[in-house]
Length: 107
Length: 117
Image (cartoon, rainbow over all chains, first blue to last red; front, side):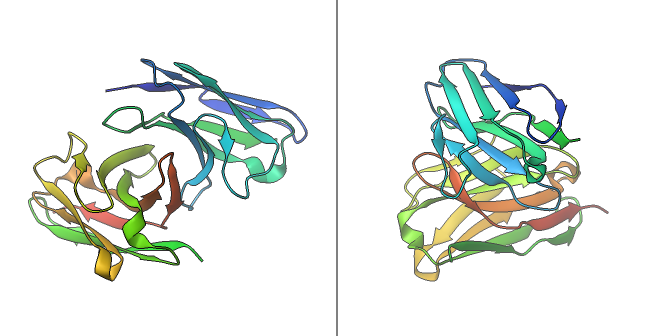
């Protein structure tokens, strides 16, 4: 199985700061990587697909980059509503796997 | 509005069975692959199973293969998960999710399954 390792586990930043979340795959997944955010008591929401394509309605401050084994989700200027747990997911090979999540806290 | 809504969760004893349902609306259900993803309390997301548009391709996580069966009825815009031989570790919130070629773009709010004696 392809293992996705996310770092850091927790990120605590202030509004206006830049957030950088990392996702590393245990083998080459080309660009078959997506990012989701989950807020408490809510379902996950798709943010980024194919490593860098913003989903419909996702603000431009969210951007994804990377290919192969190393991927990054960047939030250019944090807003208070950006808190939550962020997961990466690969669909390069079965089984589909998710990273363990990065918890983003807004100070 | 594009929506998927899960139902069918509940409390079941170890070894028991449960069938989850997911109703899609606001889109051409037959045009999309569908998936089940679960989340144990306080834990991360775990993919469970996927089914292609015409049910030609089906995949399962190793943890459920042989015990769970995914199927769909496109005429009813519905997805199902038949869960047999349930174990305590199957306790989780089960999400239904629509997938495009790229990602899971629409998720329901989930239905809770508790396996306990």
